[in-house]
Image 1 (tube, helix red, strand yellow):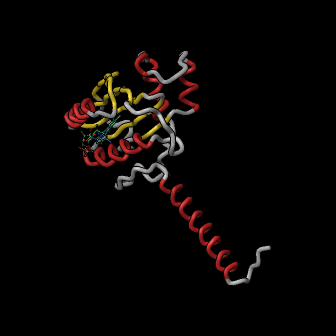
Image 2 (image 1 turned 45 degrees about the vertical axis):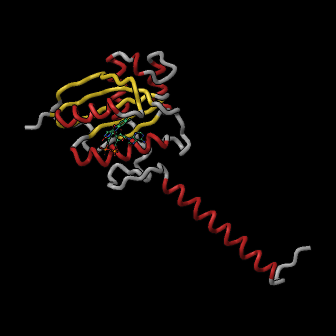
Amino acid sequence: MQNLIQIIYISRSIFPSSDAFGGLDPNVARILAKSRTNNRKKGLVGVLYFGDGCFFQCLEGEQEVVEKLYQTLLEDPRHKDLKLLSRKEINERSFPDWSMKFVGIGTEMKRLLAGYGYKSFDPYSFSPEVTQAVMGLLHAAADPTESSAISPTSNTEVITPHGDQSARWALFISIFALLVATAAMLIAAGIIKLH
Ligand code: FAD
C-alpha cells in the first residue's frame, strides 16, 4: 500500500516575469523541463502555476519522495518565501497523467480571482476556499506547453518553450536568403537588369 501525499506550496520567483517566448517565461520553461524529467523517474505528479511573479505548485506522490523534493525546493535560489498552503494524505494521484502540468496566467484565472476581489495573483492572501477554487481551475485548464517542445510525455529536456516556432523562423530565413542569393546571381549574370 502506497503512502501518498499531496502538498500545495507557493513561492516568489527571483526573476522578473517575462513572456518573451509567447507566454512561457524561459526560466520557468527550464524549471518545468527539469521537473518533468525528474518527476517521471520518481513517480511524482502535479501542476505548476506561474503568474505575477508567484509560483503555485501542487506535488503528489510517495510521502518520502515529496518531502525530500520539498527540502530541495527550499534551497533552490530561483525562488524565495516558500509557504506550505496544504499537506494531506491522498488515496490516488489527482494529476495521474502529468509529471508536471503547467498553467500560466490567463483569462480564466483572472476571472476566477476577480470573483474573489483579487486584481492580481497573490497566493499569500488566499483563503483555503480560494486555494481550492484555484486547484479546481488548474485541474480543468489546458496546458499551453502540451503541444510544444517541452511536451509532458517527452523525455527530452528542452529549454526553448516553442522549438517548433523557432524551426519555422529558421526555415523562413533560409528561404529568404536563398531568394536573395538567386536574385544576386541573376543580376550578376546580366539576366536581370537594374535601371
Ligand atoms: P540539477 O538540475 O543539476 O541542479 C543542481 C542544483 O543547481 C540545484 O541545487 C538547483 O537548485 C541548482 N540550479 C539548477 N539550475 C539552476 C539555475 N538556472 N539557477 C540557479 N540554480 C540552479 N524539481 C523537480 O525535480 N521536480 C519539481 O516538480 C520541481 N519543481 C520546481 C518548482 C519551482 C518553482 C522551482 C523554482 C524549482 C523546481 N524544481 C523541481 C527544481 C528543484 O528545486 C531542483 O533544482 C531540482 O529538483 C534539482 O534537480 P537535479 O537534482 O537533477 O539537479
